[in-house]
Length: 81
Image (tube, rainbow, N blue to C red; front, top):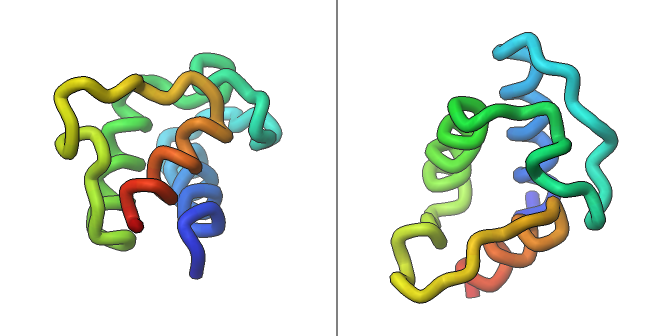
């Protein structure tokens, strides 16, 4: 499974588990409008570290945090390289 597919799967799974309404996941979707809260994102990031083997949030102190879903996916794709 590639990073995008794994991220989509984790967003959907966490939304179900946390009883959240997940917005349609498109590259331009602002993460703040996704329907997930900060706890959900913490769970997603922890699971992605397990499944993808990377945590891009701990890699660089000068990083720019992702704002959109597309940014989030690229963030993980770039960290996996």
